[in-house]
Length: 219
Image 1 (spheres, rainbow, N blue to C red):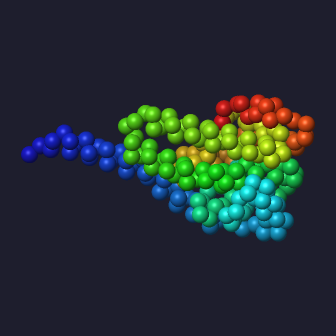
Image 2 (cartoon, rainbow, N blue to C red):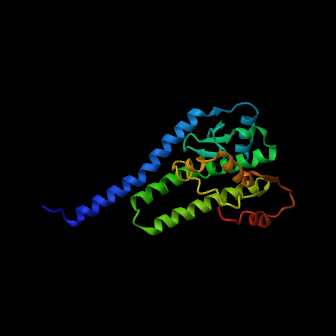
Image 3 (spheres, rainbow, N blue to C red):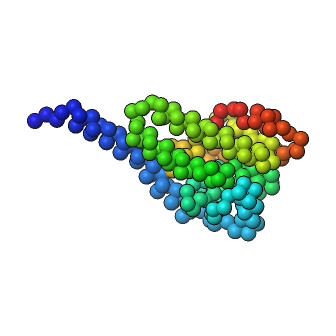
């Protein structure tokens, strides 16, 4: 006996939803592996993190990690957030370190990780609605812009983005936008992100409008 079309439609929907949820699960496993291979930072950098968290009003306990296998800072975690820095962050200038930590802490303050997980779940369930994917992409862009603005208001006047547009959405649990961007040639990725990590310390005379103009390039 042939199945009615409603059964076929339900089967297709469940199959596509399951496939779209797989990256979320794989991303979580990948983050566990990244954390296992990373080193917890204490001492001076830990003190810098506490100061920056105080600037933005972040009250959750943030774990600071260091990895020699990652070239780009990243964050993940909802109730127990983590910030991971590359090995060469130990040699960064105070202004550069401050700007990077402020940007990642801004994501934590805004609960962006939880928002991105929810957005991924919604898109997985309603994959047949194009507006769901458009809204998710728009949310990622607004999230980055909002965190840049918070960083600028905290005293960093310029954050240069790479012309190659190497940075994509910073979804903390999905490999295609967090883990995968670290794959391939690490040296090449390190060079491509130098522009984003290059921070020029703020002058008090810079206006908010002038600062906003520096992040007009698409992420």
